[in-house]
Image (cartoon, rainbow, N blue to C red; front, side, top):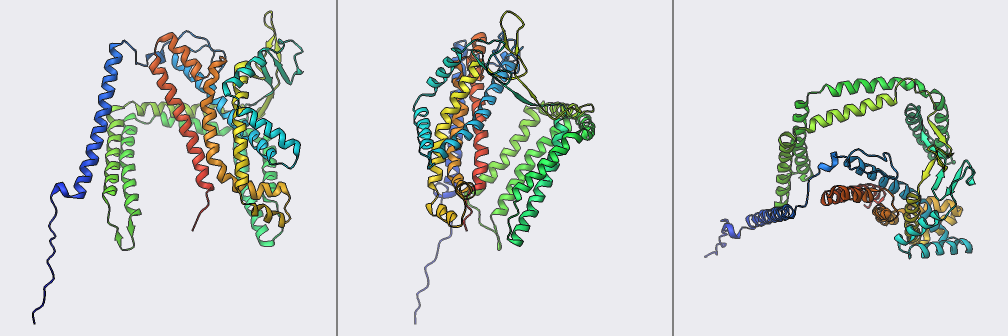
Length: 508
């Protein structure tokens, strides 16, 4: 009886122009080449046009004295353009960090007030939010600046609380809390105290789990930390020997050969790419062996290898001075720490300077001892804080309302007070909802500080404008602006995303 033989299967490879793998790689490489070529062409054309128009694009102004004075900052008479821009960066960072801290606290308070059962608190919160978030920020900044400018002049008995709080047409002056000579030695004691308090907290938690009785772990840990801090306030000079350790490290780092460090940086680039490829292959490994890799997997490994090699070439050949900069910077850092921990620093760790009024000429003015807010700083600070706090309050209110009502009912059924339920049940769950939009508000606050130019506060935008008016280097200054704000935004995003990942719900 005749049998039908199975049809033969042709295993021959298709032509190259029909091979999916080949076509995919060719298209990706061609797209990359076209993109790089287009960027190169546009950059070359832009350079030719700028040179033809005599528009300067160099950064030599960073080392030239711009001949300007700044109204406030760590250096009011900078000797170089780079120093002037650095003063503006520090002023902007001060404004942003302090504004984020205060706006968050105020926004949480107002958000909780809007959810309060007290009619008066609820209406005050509503008026605060609906008024401030609907008035343009620039208008608010100008309003606060006009209010401060209309106040009385500085006198010897200026109030409202003479010697503690001064308010006048020169701005605002408050007591200034600052670190003193013994702070860094005391900081070592505090680190030891934090470790002891954390171990004590864990022990109290284990005791509570074993017996079922409330052991107050956080309160107990805080009490231990407070006790250690109080003891360390008097015994911190015993850690003066740490300065000798940092001094020895400074000498050791300064003696490292530059060539050795340069080679180590190149090896680190190649080794990092190799470790990433190894980790990537291990992630694709199954109990039966290495899983079949896709074209995208090969592309990632090739990209990592090429990136490591190019990084090594860049640091070894194109930037040979990196090792010298790293050695000098690290040696200077250890030298500064050696001075901070040096012997003879036996003073108190933290001190408070009260504001005062001095008169060196015809007119009295705020002295250097207090925390002085100029009119420009105060106007921008109150503007961005109140404006951002109004939006944060709505985020807090929406996050709390997003928590299922059954959670509040369950907390009430367990006999928890409203404040306790809010602190331990509602807000921890609402924080997962609030954190992403809070990050956006922090980004907005940081970028909104650029409106300080409207009231003459020396932030990076105002200083940069003065610098390019003096030097004519508009494009370089604008590029520094862009890089600075990009770095601030990315840093805030990284911090917010770190906590967002840690707080997310882990699903099975």
